[in-house]
Image 1 (spheres, rainbow, N blue to C red):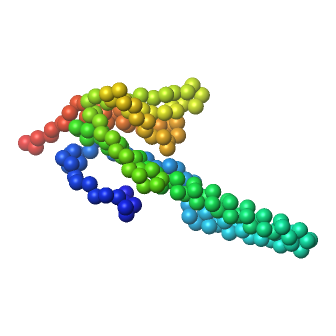
Image 2 (tube, one colour):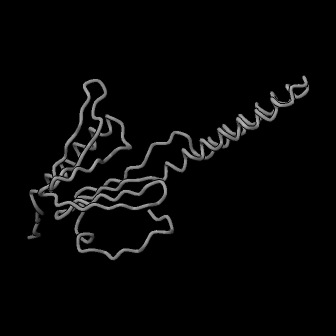
Length: 177
């Protein structure tokens, strides 16, 4: 993922290792750009027609308020789309677990853990399911997979536990004879 303003970073030795597990997590958005345009066109048309009706009845301030409503809804959608630019990448190799988080503003934060020493923890609600997932190592606790729903977190938890177990077992060699 490249946003154009990221600083090039040198490749480390661990990036040349085989990846046991890799996941790119992004927030779910059910409305794409085409749907946004359709909703805004429909809302603008309804507001304009209703505003003109009020204008013809002599209630001219209502016409401006309908336009203001459309502007506020457009702004709310834009804020929502901007928040969708956030992402979280989790990569497990035989020697490290990397978490790279990109905020909606493009700020990058990275954490590196030793897969032999990292522990995966979860907070579970009886009715809701898994609420939070955490990586714990050396007294540090990092919350991960915040974008996912409870069922997706359970699936992600199982896959990440399997990857950490594979990293703890070490590389398997398949010599060709």
